[in-house]
Length: 295
Image 1: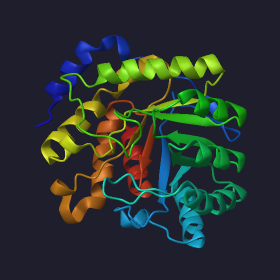
Image 2 (image 1 turned 135 degrees about the horizontal axis):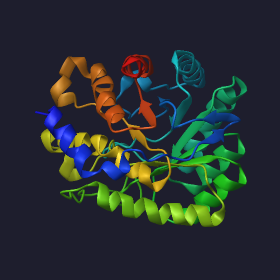
Image 3 (image 1 turned 180 degrees about the horizontal axis):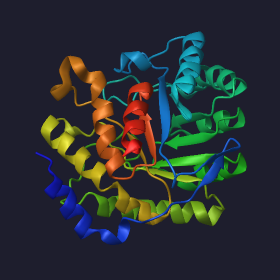
Image 4 (image 1 turned 135 degrees about the vertical axis):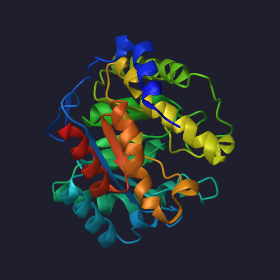
């Protein structure tokens, strides 16, 4: 059971990280003042394989409608993906991804909605940034320089995801460490250095808690790992950049109340000083964060 004693011990062990401040920058002409308040990223899945049914949109019209609704509900960004990250999901050809993404992206940008595109493919990245995507949600690890150069060229921000593998679809067993933050910190330091050498300073780091590693299928192991990382998030902020978390589901524990899972994990993420919350449940998570800010 998570207790105040756990939180106090965490505070005492890493006091030097508690007051860390992170970079603030404009995305699509809007300032993201990460040191002042948290931000929300809503989700649109264009793949029928995505299991979170409320976020799946199989037509352009549905996707645009959901994107506008998420924006109205309080999403500062809308993240759009055309390939599911589920291990058993079919791979989506690059041409198919681009054909699905571009009309949704262009329509949402025309409506004034800031758009993030989730991909690990350079061709998809280039097509979407050229069409006006504001953020690259990069879920790969290969050849980072080409992705950073594209983002810099189009003045876009990049979410750098922590992936143990070539990309989110090519992962095996997760290397579980007693302290999961240490390897993440090392990985992000290397990627940040590469990005800064190119002149890219609009960076957000994401520990990748929603990815489907083979040895994290046991619910207790997975949720314990996720909770630990959420509460330790403030330590990653010492790297100087905001931290994004994709909020998980814990279906095994929440069952029919699975739509309450992301708001629950949002509390832990907020306690850890998360800057950007990626969620399928924007109004629920917004209500939680707004309530926490009252204190």
